[in-house]
Image 1 (spheres, rainbow, N blue to C red):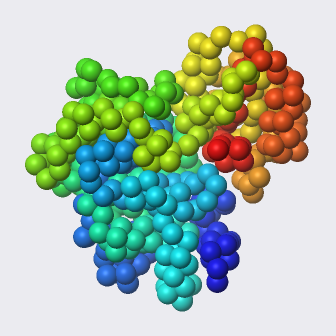
Image 2: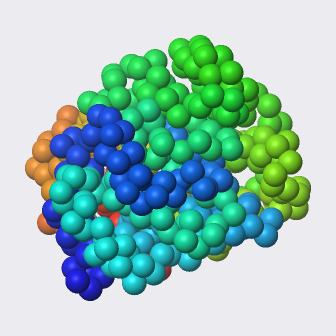
Length: 408
């Protein structure tokens, strides 16, 4: 198989949350442990930082990688989902894994994958661990896929665990209260491994404290401990807490005396995240006159901050290109959107995309008026045609919508 055939096989043969949603979620770690053993347990050879959380875990992971790269280390970065190409998920020093490595890995282990019903995500995690060990990375940043306790990444014992924040998302798997979701995320806390919490509430803090105490893990609440917040090239308002989380995580890492990151490395790393890691889709500007921004925020917590940031912009008219996936609670997110805007409703090109008819009808009940379009591309084109140079265009609602844009 060539690269395209290999990734098509990965996407189509086995459950993949990005495409299929609920049916791809596995409720134990048996498979990933079996796969790790088959691969010679590469994860035990890795020094890692493990990052979980409802929002911000992708940005936080990329920030950490950038900072450690600035400090001169060879850094592996495993994140999900991807926007354009599967290889975005697995990088070393900002460079994507080669097509050749992906093809050879899948070809070599394909019979094992098929006979043991490995999921797409399990294969991806196994590939990342195998690649990082073979390339001798000095440290790897591993982002949780979904939840924490039962996530395939949760076989590692990291140097530091990180939980960015808790909000209601993926409630069909993780529970429908902040306490239940915090319990799932706190499942990454390991015995004697320090944990950094980005944001907490009166409801979630006791969950984190109890789990840390149970594991004799020192716990650090970044929002309380970090007073000076550095600048970053990632300028979304929601990055404020992510930066605090990164700064506290680096402080904990430095205290272990295994890795050394200077004040300058930290500042430089935060200022060069996109350049060092290739991160895209986070309050990313696609054009000016009219100013055009896209963002992958897709739940109540993330979208509330983004909608607030839009209101700080100066513009004559607001154009919003909006598409979502079919497991979103529309009644929780649609009230966040401004009524004084023209909407371009679209369905992302995914089997999980919500139909434009349902989205438009639900949006109208919340006073959000606009037209429906057959694709993200058509909706975006219409917005650009209708907007004058003093207007503002926002494109979002889903990672899948952003994935279809010309990101450059």
